[in-house]
Amino acid sequence: MRVVAIAITLVLSIVGSAAAQEWEEFVSKEDGFKVDFPGKPKITDMTWKSQLDYILPGKAYSIEKGKERYSMTVVDYRPIEQQGIDRSKTCEEGNQQCRQNAGVMGPGYWRHDERGGVMYATFKLIQKAAKVTSLAWEWQDMVEGNFLQLTNPDESRTFAYVAMHENKLYILEGTVPKGYPEPGLFQQSMGFVDANGNGLRYQNVIYSNAYHGMGVYPKPGAGGGFPAGGQGGQGAPNANQNQGAAR
Image (cartoon, rainbow, N blue to C red; front, side):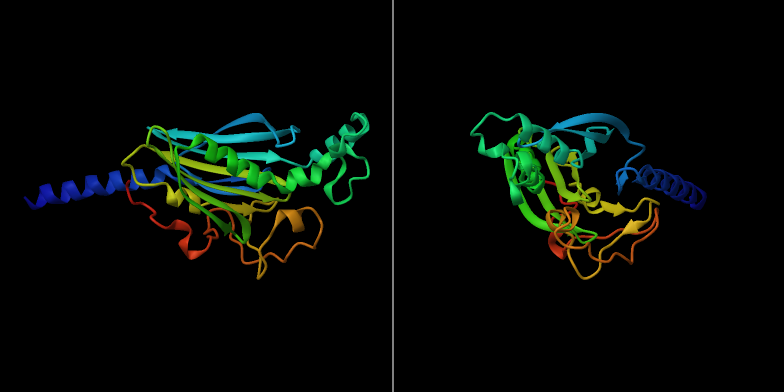
């Protein structure tokens, strides 16, 4: 009996190790983020239409694990300034949105459009949901953003995080079927990296793309980050409330 017990323990240990190894940290130096995925994600080029109909380039990193879906969408807002300038030169007379001397709004209102990127992406997520169970301002690695918990029309659950960093929009989504443990750990694993893939974590000041990314104020100092494979930052203590509880 002891031999059988040892054998069973060994099998369970191997199975447990294999399950744990399915999840691993994925780092994108190009897009400046890291997150834990259950395997290597598929990377697809895509375009994003902003709230004011600017067309921006991006990438979708996605993977399916059975009935579970995990994705990170990254949209590059850096081309929007030139698009706004170009639009302001061709607008019809009297179109206030496209004044060339738009000041704080930017030609073609591009500054307003970028500042509203997080809110617009959050709204688009809410539009798809049947019920919003949580919507909160939070942060990851001291970068501000919105955390969402949604119930979808098929009663699946989505945990999402939307933020902007260095003029890029990040939309993280983890969706699991009804009754599955909620994807709080996926949501919390999101972090930011520098050009060398080392983790970033701003010190003492919350990073806001509307101020720091767009050059209104100097960026806060960063330090205390972790190299790829290390620990990442987390949001406020209540950011992972109800994590792992099936609904």
